[in-house]
Length: 382
Ligand code: MG
Image (cartoon, rainbow, N blue to C red; front, side):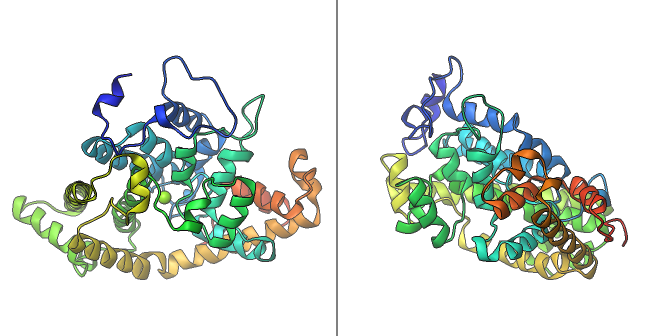
């Protein structure tokens, strides 16, 4: 296969994959990571991402990011950096496209509410839920539950995990994807790259969506050194530029520089680390990273977005409504499981079945169900 010739010795290699939970014969024309990517693209959970909130509720405007477009942007950034770093593009694409499959409807508000509902039963955490989706919840194959993905893709999907959850995973799958959180090892370089791409993508697109929504302005963004730098660069280069094009050009320059910064910094770190194989990356501190100044600038931007966008009173108001809907749904299904599809009704882990059902919903299906079950909160009331 031709891909191997462009891979660095420290890249993940499908030919040396730790394999799938259930053995499957190789595909004739596709490597295992490609096959994982294809399974993810064809999954129901992936299609539902179109109607799941990233920051702005799905109905608030057609051009805001959804979990789907966010995931595509993460995949674009990760693939572009993977190619330059000679890491495995198919693996980063698979991980990027799957990383948010476990998100509830209504963004972080939905997750917080579901986590509170499940507090005494192990909580609810979207990374772990993404893994549950690909390991158990997808129903597409005749001979197994889930998508039966390779270890490497699953490892990348589980980007964070509490020690309690890691120990539970370890019981089910000794030495599996929970193990690294117990022994404090890093994931593959491809997984590290997807993590950073996620951060780069949402910081950039949340500026765009924030300005589009009218909750942020370019003037206000001048207080963020990173954004101010690129918006001034844009003005220097194009003195006539204004409005949207000023914003887009600013974001474009910022994204390019961040990508080059990660590539350059990571190449240096890799040179110093002298890795012989992909497994060696596990024993080093995070190798895929920003330079220190870019890391600092990115943190400042994150803090700004958290303060001025995610905690904006208008976002906060819809957040409260979303939490109320998720709580109501949880109570309604727990009280009367016959309101759920048969497969969920029949499960013995009743509360987890309810959580899985709600987590899989799109924003609009959750809102419809809420109304059907007698809820009075209307998500379109602003
Ligand atoms: Mg994400």
